[in-house]
Length: 187
Ligand code: HEM
Image 1 (tube, rainbow, N blue to C red):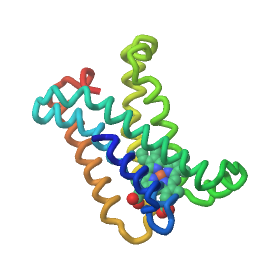
Image 2 (cartoon, rainbow, N blue to C red; image 1 turned 30 degrees about the horizontal axis):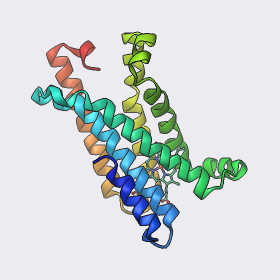
Image 3 (cartoon, rainbow, N blue to C red; image 1 turned 135 degrees about the vertical axis):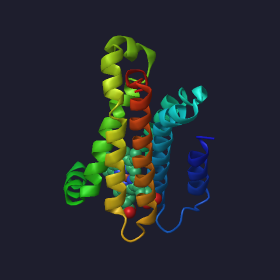
């Protein structure tokens, strides 16, 4: 299922069916897919806390990795197809477009989280440091949401909806962890 957005994009590219600006279409689709998977990943703990669904907890990592995968395609598309690796123009444009800086900040938080999502990293870092690092998922989400809301021109409904869901997830998690007194176990 997680590969369907990619398959859909590849088919669109091959069949020349991505509209007048295929590079922008890929940018928008990979960005949206990365965002959705990040939100899915952040939903797992609140769903577990609310309904006791233990099966959702392992999906956190899987969704997080898919988010990083699509975010990497997004960044690759930006650097390669959109800017042809022209670092001078990339840096100039990045600093002229604050939304791009927020996107980059989000990506550079997701990167160490993806690298350390494997068992060896958990042993190497130790549970405390590992959990601390992985709590930055919320910061990555806030930065990605800022990236999204800053780049849209009029259609604010979708980014606002994503932000509302993020706030809800955070509130559920915060209060239920407090109530259960199990904060340390559900990072
Ligand atoms: C170096 C990092 C990044 C850069 C340079 C970047 C750049 C861009 C650009 C140029 C667009 C298209 C703007 C437009 O044509 O209107 C875009 C859209 C978007 N990006 Fe990023 N981005 C980055 C990272 C991220 C990350 C990490 C996420 C999510 C986790 C993300 C999510 C999105 C979303 C949701 C959209 C809008 C999609 C839509 O309107 O349907 N971006 N980004």
